[in-house]
Length: 299
Image (cartoon, rainbow, N blue to C red):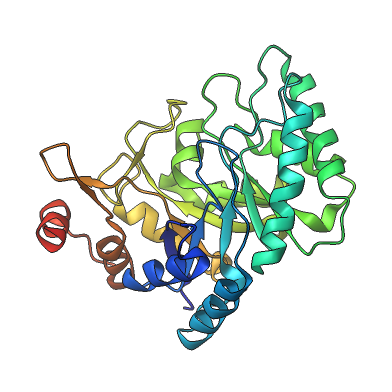
């Protein structure tokens, strides 16, 4: 099976996309995901075109297909909220343009939270916003992420996402990113992933599934809490996540890890788990000593 596996990596102004590629390679990954700036705000620096070209060459030399690389929009953008709707639309239009400048054609977006509006109003706001944002000449697809359903989040089930997708004018520029922690927390039981995937296909269609965030969950099914856990250390479990990753129907879809960093124990340093988690996934063997191995490696 052609396994396309990677993780979230950093993107820093001084190294740009080059640094992101090098970090991904350090984890033995063949894809990756990044924010084009800090995830907590919408401040964005200009893109260094020389870095982009050098990064593309580095990807080509290391068998990373740029079509499998993902950009994630910052969490604070909320298309569902009427109060900052115009700002969110304006920012996302610029973020789509930035993706195009970077050569990335997939942008993951949390649909939004219906703050001070009804669920239906929130969904209608998202649809209206996407119809404005996607009215462009850029070859960039926005992937709506499945959500855990905490608070007033939109996207807590496949039906909500389908309602949005069906009413977006530019159907070829919209897709879905499935997050394993989120759908488990939303109430989908990954002990029977084939059934979940069949439900997704019946409601939305597998042709719209273009990215998978692979995360274990600190919480039980249906908790609506959205707390990621390291692979095999949560309530979804290693075997269930392996079944997701190696499902034949999902073979050509990039899988991205967003699992927590490992604390050193002194609360001063935390280490990325991705090199070791990707190794587990490639070997299909759970490492019960994962935490200690990571700390020993990075100390």
